[in-house]
Image (cartoon, rainbow, N blue to C red; front, side, top):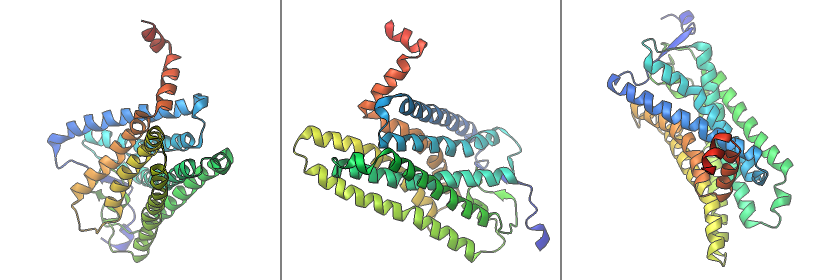
Length: 316
């Protein structure tokens, strides 16, 4: 193929899991159910944090942002997967591929920063409870949330713009979405500049925020262990346990995808990790945060009680 034909692809084929046709129906059902639960759970969490006056603290402001990111992240890729599983022509337009790549990177990058911000919030709440209302006032919370969005969106724009300028020698993407690493595997030659941009952004958004989270939790655990009452320790652990669980799930999958040697696993394994990373984690987030949180449970009962169907059911 000549140089002038390298960048004229108007569409791409998404191979997805088409090598395993017997599993595609099961994959469709699994992805659809997880997608609907993700939309319902995260939308409910956003709704109750907006409507309930008791959930106006910084933690719930950040949690609402996290839920919105999860909705955007899954909506960027899972509908395409569902359509392509049932379609014989598993294609996506170049413009659609670019948007999908950008949104996935932007939401993922923003979540990396926001999880570190949430760890800092928990550190201040537990280690400096008297100064917490001053240090984490509404203005500071909005600024930190906005900084997370700006950082994630700008780094995603940088990565996407570099990736889409790489000459491609094919249009068959061995993935179920326009995942940036899968697209770059179609490059006709390695680009040192693109590799350096990817490495720098990955280091800035994965190990560094994770290190800050670990440092925060060292101080948090040290403070919790000094609490005299068992009830106080239990409340502090339950407050931080949900966030720590989400961090482990999210960063575990992200690190295995973006900071590993390119030859360390097969593309099929990468696709499975990407599916779990894109479907399972966003679905679990609202469940994890509400499972042991009495405030969220009470707010949910209050909001549902205002719906005629649920109010009638409770009265029965």
